[in-house]
Image (tube, rainbow, N blue to C red):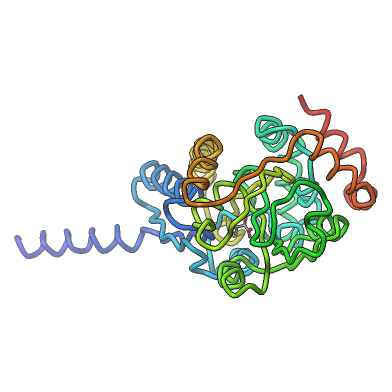
Length: 322
Ligand code: PAF
């Protein structure tokens, strides 16, 4: 009798273990970054609400490769989930590139309202057409320029600057128009390229500059806030199609919680990041309103291209969002 009970218990445990599905979650930065904080919250919510039927396995610090490779893995179904920047997104869903237009958003609040509102949701739906399920927009903050050559106050100051950009056509057009020498590169190569001097600088939000310890390899930080940097929570289509509607709702709600955690992290680093980077030895300057206007003016021909690509109506809808 006792032997039968023990066997039944073992069988039960084995069934529970095999019923638990592993969820691979890839992201570019350390577990202590805004990505790690969001990933942990997503995991915590989904694992608790599903009563352990799903178990997240994190692949931080580009453990699954650059963001493009990870998105391809999610598309193929070899990776269940990822949180990625808008870096290579427009190579999958061209319309997503509209958020990469320089000086489009007035502040974080404006960006969040657009992404959570009709325009953001319409663009999330477009991922359905390319075998991806995009369930929420997260964020990194506004991007700023760091470099080892000189302080930046005017567009002339970035003339010829070998600046690493994401593999993002909207950003590349902007920096080409400004006269820099944009060098698109996947993130895992960036620190090495900065150390070796094959590039002079890069641009990223304070969340990334602090998390990736860029003060160790960069001298100047220019608070240019030239472009907002969203992130997106992607889920693999084959995995999503296999979920019950109830479980999909758990993943969606968990992502909403994770976005809140990510935005709270960004709010924190926006208020403390500059002092931290100064203390770590960076020379920090901030573009004034007039200086930003000069950069915007220098981008006039780029804006014409963006209107052609994304439609002026869409850009105007974003600008008009209160
Ligand atoms: O610059 C990038 O490529 C991205 O902002 C990063 C650092 C990979 C975070 O998503």
